[in-house]
Length: 175
Image 1: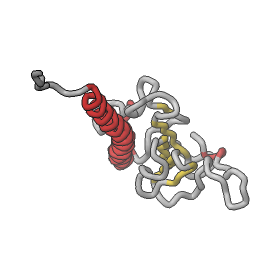
Image 2: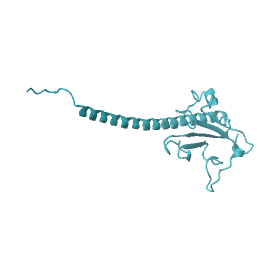
Image 3: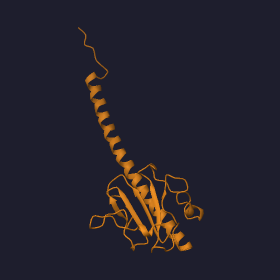
Image 4: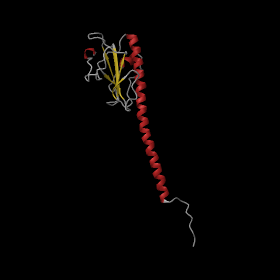
């Protein structure tokens, strides 16, 4: 009787290898999703810094921030005055740029009846809670950041609750 020598792998060995590869690829894909999310939040932070630098330069040139009762980055012409004046190369866009992941800009008055654009606000949503709010910003929720310039403000953030649990009233200061 002759014994046959097998030169291949058994079915069990192949199934074990396939299972190990599937497990490793699942772990890699899960880590990749987390990395993408953190990367988008880092991009938001850098873009916000660029917007604030442009806003400060605009303010130094024109003695006020661009007047606006509210601009959204998912609309055409977001922060167009900064692009037109040469402080930004293009209108900033959030990496996702679909609600709620957009940038929002508004300007306010220092005093009721005063000139527009004395206070600027940018707010945006992030994906990893409490991680990417620009220095001096406040979290209105674990994933929503509000930043005002100049700091400190005469008026508190109208979107944050006061210590008494009611909303602050800055409505007379809206542009």
